[in-house]
Image (cartoon, rainbow, N blue to C red; front, top):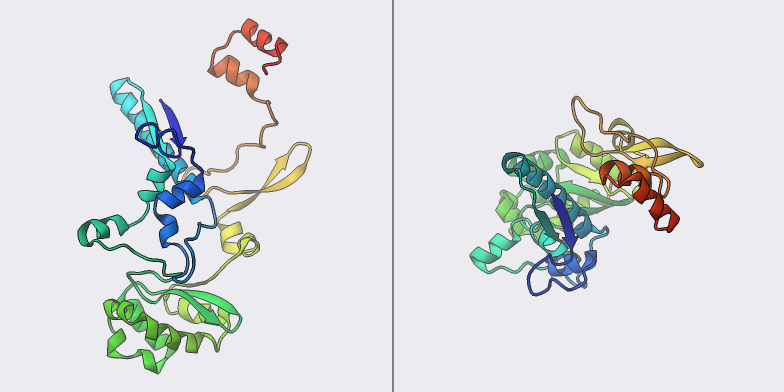
Length: 277
Protein backbone atom coordinates (compact mmCIF):
# COMPACT_ATOMS: atom_id res chain seq x y z
CA UNK A 1 0.00 0.00 0.00
CA UNK A 2 1.36 3.39 -0.93
CA UNK A 3 -0.16 6.87 -1.02
CA UNK A 4 0.04 10.15 -2.87
CA UNK A 5 -1.12 13.63 -1.89
CA UNK A 6 -1.03 16.20 -4.68
CA UNK A 7 -2.80 19.36 -5.70
CA UNK A 8 -5.18 17.77 -8.19
CA UNK A 9 -4.70 14.00 -7.99
CA UNK A 10 -3.04 11.42 -10.22
CA UNK A 11 -5.51 11.61 -13.12
CA UNK A 12 -7.73 14.17 -14.80
CA UNK A 13 -7.08 17.28 -16.93
CA UNK A 14 -5.25 19.12 -14.12
CA UNK A 15 -3.06 16.26 -12.90
CA UNK A 16 0.17 17.98 -13.99
CA UNK A 17 -0.63 21.28 -12.31
CA UNK A 18 1.28 22.37 -9.23
CA UNK A 19 -0.75 22.85 -6.11
CA UNK A 20 -0.25 24.32 -2.66
CA UNK A 21 -2.74 24.62 0.18
CA UNK A 22 -4.06 27.96 -1.02
CA UNK A 23 -4.85 26.41 -4.42
CA UNK A 24 -6.82 23.67 -2.67
CA UNK A 25 -8.75 26.25 -0.65
CA UNK A 26 -9.42 28.35 -3.75
CA UNK A 27 -10.55 25.64 -6.17
CA UNK A 28 -12.15 23.54 -3.43
CA UNK A 29 -14.58 26.39 -2.75
CA UNK A 30 -13.47 27.47 0.72
CA UNK A 31 -12.13 30.93 -0.18
CA UNK A 32 -15.42 31.86 -1.84
CA UNK A 33 -17.34 31.47 1.44
CA UNK A 34 -14.72 32.72 3.92
CA UNK A 35 -14.55 36.39 4.89
CA UNK A 36 -16.90 39.33 5.26
CA UNK A 37 -19.63 40.26 2.76
CA UNK A 38 -17.89 43.47 1.67
CA UNK A 39 -14.40 41.94 1.65
CA UNK A 40 -12.38 39.73 -0.71
CA UNK A 41 -12.25 35.92 -0.65
CA UNK A 42 -10.16 35.00 2.39
CA UNK A 43 -7.76 32.14 3.04
CA UNK A 44 -8.24 30.17 6.24
CA UNK A 45 -5.77 31.13 8.96
CA UNK A 46 -4.10 27.72 8.73
CA UNK A 47 -3.16 25.39 5.87
CA UNK A 48 -6.45 23.56 6.29
CA UNK A 49 -6.24 21.98 2.82
CA UNK A 50 -2.96 20.32 3.77
CA UNK A 51 -4.42 19.14 7.07
CA UNK A 52 -7.64 17.79 5.53
CA UNK A 53 -5.81 15.96 2.75
CA UNK A 54 -3.45 14.40 5.31
CA UNK A 55 -6.37 13.15 7.38
CA UNK A 56 -8.22 11.79 4.33
CA UNK A 57 -5.00 10.13 3.19
CA UNK A 58 -4.55 8.47 6.58
CA UNK A 59 -8.11 7.15 6.44
CA UNK A 60 -7.47 5.90 2.90
CA UNK A 61 -4.28 4.10 3.94
CA UNK A 62 -6.07 2.41 6.84
CA UNK A 63 -8.89 1.35 4.51
CA UNK A 64 -6.40 0.01 1.94
CA UNK A 65 -4.58 -1.97 4.65
CA UNK A 66 -7.89 -3.48 5.77
CA UNK A 67 -8.71 -4.44 2.18
CA UNK A 68 -5.26 -5.97 1.82
CA UNK A 69 -5.96 -8.15 4.86
CA UNK A 70 -8.96 -9.61 3.03
CA UNK A 71 -7.66 -9.75 -0.55
CA UNK A 72 -3.88 -9.90 -0.18
CA UNK A 73 -3.58 -7.06 -2.68
CA UNK A 74 -2.17 -3.59 -2.09
CA UNK A 75 -3.09 -0.46 -3.99
CA UNK A 76 -2.41 3.25 -4.45
CA UNK A 77 -4.26 5.75 -2.27
CA UNK A 78 -4.71 8.93 -4.35
CA UNK A 79 -5.74 12.11 -2.47
CA UNK A 80 -5.85 15.66 -3.80
CA UNK A 81 -5.94 18.98 -1.96
CA UNK A 82 -8.86 20.24 -4.05
CA UNK A 83 -10.95 17.08 -3.54
CA UNK A 84 -10.31 17.18 0.21
CA UNK A 85 -11.43 20.78 0.64
CA UNK A 86 -14.45 20.29 -1.64
CA UNK A 87 -15.51 17.20 0.35
CA UNK A 88 -15.48 19.32 3.53
CA UNK A 89 -17.97 21.99 2.47
CA UNK A 90 -20.73 20.55 4.67
CA UNK A 91 -24.11 20.79 2.93
CA UNK A 92 -23.12 23.47 0.41
CA UNK A 93 -22.81 21.05 -2.55
CA UNK A 94 -26.18 19.43 -1.81
CA UNK A 95 -27.91 22.80 -1.56
CA UNK A 96 -26.49 23.73 -4.93
CA UNK A 97 -27.49 20.39 -6.47
CA UNK A 98 -31.04 20.67 -5.11
CA UNK A 99 -31.74 24.40 -5.21
CA UNK A 100 -28.99 26.05 -7.26
CA UNK A 101 -27.96 28.17 -4.26
CA UNK A 102 -24.45 29.67 -4.40
CA UNK A 103 -23.55 30.85 -0.86
CA UNK A 104 -21.76 34.12 -0.27
CA UNK A 105 -19.39 35.32 2.43
CA UNK A 106 -21.21 36.11 5.67
CA UNK A 107 -18.43 36.67 8.22
CA UNK A 108 -18.65 34.68 11.44
CA UNK A 109 -22.39 34.10 11.15
CA UNK A 110 -23.62 30.59 10.36
CA UNK A 111 -26.19 30.55 7.58
CA UNK A 112 -28.56 27.94 9.01
CA UNK A 113 -28.85 28.84 12.70
CA UNK A 114 -28.90 32.09 14.66
CA UNK A 115 -27.54 33.53 16.88
CA UNK A 116 -24.38 31.60 16.01
CA UNK A 117 -21.89 34.43 15.68
CA UNK A 118 -19.33 36.70 17.30
CA UNK A 119 -20.65 39.61 19.37
CA UNK A 120 -18.89 42.74 20.58
CA UNK A 121 -18.47 43.17 24.33
CA UNK A 122 -17.12 45.88 26.63
CA UNK A 123 -13.62 44.40 26.33
CA UNK A 124 -13.48 42.53 23.03
CA UNK A 125 -15.61 39.86 21.40
CA UNK A 126 -17.41 36.74 22.55
CA UNK A 127 -18.87 33.75 20.72
CA UNK A 128 -22.49 32.74 21.26
CA UNK A 129 -23.80 29.58 19.62
CA UNK A 130 -27.54 28.89 19.83
CA UNK A 131 -28.43 26.00 17.54
CA UNK A 132 -31.98 25.17 18.65
CA UNK A 133 -35.11 26.74 20.07
CA UNK A 134 -34.70 25.20 23.52
CA UNK A 135 -31.35 26.93 24.01
CA UNK A 136 -32.88 30.14 22.64
CA UNK A 137 -35.53 30.13 25.37
CA UNK A 138 -32.81 29.72 27.98
CA UNK A 139 -30.93 32.61 26.40
CA UNK A 140 -33.99 34.87 26.55
CA UNK A 141 -34.54 33.99 30.21
CA UNK A 142 -30.86 34.33 31.18
CA UNK A 143 -30.27 37.70 29.50
CA UNK A 144 -33.73 39.23 30.05
CA UNK A 145 -33.38 41.28 26.87
CA UNK A 146 -37.02 42.27 26.47
CA UNK A 147 -36.83 43.17 22.78
CA UNK A 148 -35.75 39.65 21.74
CA UNK A 149 -38.72 37.98 23.43
CA UNK A 150 -40.69 38.60 20.28
CA UNK A 151 -42.61 36.28 17.96
CA UNK A 152 -40.38 37.18 15.00
CA UNK A 153 -37.47 35.53 16.84
CA UNK A 154 -39.42 32.59 18.27
CA UNK A 155 -38.06 29.88 15.95
CA UNK A 156 -34.65 29.32 14.44
CA UNK A 157 -36.00 29.88 10.92
CA UNK A 158 -37.37 33.27 12.00
CA UNK A 159 -34.13 34.20 13.75
CA UNK A 160 -32.14 33.38 10.62
CA UNK A 161 -34.56 35.44 8.54
CA UNK A 162 -34.36 38.39 10.96
CA UNK A 163 -30.71 38.12 11.99
CA UNK A 164 -29.92 41.69 10.88
CA UNK A 165 -32.33 43.15 13.43
CA UNK A 166 -31.53 40.57 16.11
CA UNK A 167 -27.76 41.06 16.31
CA UNK A 168 -27.91 44.73 17.43
CA UNK A 169 -30.37 43.80 20.16
CA UNK A 170 -28.04 41.12 21.51
CA UNK A 171 -25.03 43.44 21.24
CA UNK A 172 -26.97 46.06 23.19
CA UNK A 173 -26.68 43.58 26.07
CA UNK A 174 -23.16 42.26 25.42
CA UNK A 175 -21.55 45.69 24.96
CA UNK A 176 -22.47 46.60 28.54
CA UNK A 177 -20.62 43.60 29.94
CA UNK A 178 -17.17 42.05 29.90
CA UNK A 179 -16.37 38.80 28.10
CA UNK A 180 -15.91 36.74 31.23
CA UNK A 181 -19.18 37.91 32.77
CA UNK A 182 -21.10 37.02 29.60
CA UNK A 183 -19.44 33.62 29.28
CA UNK A 184 -20.19 32.80 32.91
CA UNK A 185 -23.85 33.84 32.66
CA UNK A 186 -24.45 31.87 29.49
CA UNK A 187 -22.50 28.72 30.36
CA UNK A 188 -24.14 28.59 33.79
CA UNK A 189 -27.45 28.38 31.92
CA UNK A 190 -26.32 25.71 29.45
CA UNK A 191 -25.83 28.17 26.58
CA UNK A 192 -22.68 27.61 24.47
CA UNK A 193 -20.40 30.64 24.72
CA UNK A 194 -16.66 31.17 24.63
CA UNK A 195 -13.88 33.71 24.27
CA UNK A 196 -11.88 33.98 21.06
CA UNK A 197 -8.41 32.65 21.90
CA UNK A 198 -5.03 33.44 20.42
CA UNK A 199 -2.14 31.01 20.83
CA UNK A 200 -1.06 32.55 24.16
CA UNK A 201 -4.55 32.08 25.57
CA UNK A 202 -4.68 28.45 24.43
CA UNK A 203 -1.31 27.54 25.91
CA UNK A 204 -2.29 29.18 29.19
CA UNK A 205 -5.70 27.52 29.47
CA UNK A 206 -5.86 24.96 32.28
CA UNK A 207 -8.47 22.81 30.55
CA UNK A 208 -6.92 22.65 27.07
CA UNK A 209 -3.21 22.77 27.86
CA UNK A 210 -3.19 20.93 31.18
CA UNK A 211 -6.26 18.79 31.83
CA UNK A 212 -6.52 17.70 28.18
CA UNK A 213 -2.72 17.52 27.88
CA UNK A 214 -2.58 19.42 24.61
CA UNK A 215 0.70 21.06 25.66
CA UNK A 216 3.42 18.67 26.82
CA UNK A 217 7.07 18.98 27.81
CA UNK A 218 9.63 16.83 26.03
CA UNK A 219 13.36 16.31 26.67
CA UNK A 220 15.28 17.06 23.48
CA UNK A 221 18.99 16.07 23.45
CA UNK A 222 21.25 19.06 23.02
CA UNK A 223 18.46 21.52 23.75
CA UNK A 224 16.76 20.56 27.01
CA UNK A 225 13.05 20.67 27.73
CA UNK A 226 10.82 21.88 24.91
CA UNK A 227 7.07 22.26 24.63
CA UNK A 228 5.23 20.16 22.04
CA UNK A 229 1.61 19.63 21.07
CA UNK A 230 -0.29 16.75 22.61
CA UNK A 231 -2.48 14.34 20.68
CA UNK A 232 -6.13 15.41 20.26
CA UNK A 233 -7.17 11.74 20.20
CA UNK A 234 -7.76 10.50 23.75
CA UNK A 235 -8.28 6.81 24.46
CA UNK A 236 -9.59 5.09 27.57
CA UNK A 237 -6.83 2.45 27.63
CA UNK A 238 -3.97 3.85 25.57
CA UNK A 239 -2.27 7.18 26.18
CA UNK A 240 -1.13 8.53 22.80
CA UNK A 241 1.85 10.55 24.03
CA UNK A 242 5.20 11.26 22.32
CA UNK A 243 7.38 8.14 22.45
CA UNK A 244 10.64 10.04 22.59
CA UNK A 245 12.51 13.08 21.32
CA UNK A 246 12.50 14.07 17.68
CA UNK A 247 15.29 12.22 15.82
CA UNK A 248 18.35 14.13 14.71
CA UNK A 249 18.82 14.61 10.98
CA UNK A 250 19.70 11.22 9.51
CA UNK A 251 19.56 9.44 12.88
CA UNK A 252 17.28 6.65 11.63
CA UNK A 253 18.67 6.31 8.11
CA UNK A 254 20.65 3.16 8.87
CA UNK A 255 17.81 1.30 10.60
CA UNK A 256 15.31 2.28 7.87
CA UNK A 257 17.56 1.08 5.05
CA UNK A 258 18.82 -2.10 6.72
CA UNK A 259 15.74 -3.24 8.62
CA UNK A 260 12.75 -1.88 6.71
CA UNK A 261 14.07 -1.72 3.15
CA UNK A 262 16.38 -4.74 3.62
CA UNK A 263 19.39 -3.07 2.00
CA UNK A 264 22.46 -5.29 2.51
CA UNK A 265 25.33 -4.17 4.69
CA UNK A 266 27.62 -4.00 1.67
CA UNK A 267 25.13 -1.87 -0.30
CA UNK A 268 24.75 0.40 2.68
CA UNK A 269 28.52 0.92 2.96
CA UNK A 270 28.65 1.80 -0.75
CA UNK A 271 25.97 4.46 -0.26
CA UNK A 272 27.92 5.92 2.65
CA UNK A 273 31.20 5.83 0.65
CA UNK A 274 29.54 7.65 -2.27
CA UNK A 275 28.09 10.18 0.20
CA UNK A 276 24.57 9.36 -0.95
CA UNK A 277 23.72 9.18 2.74
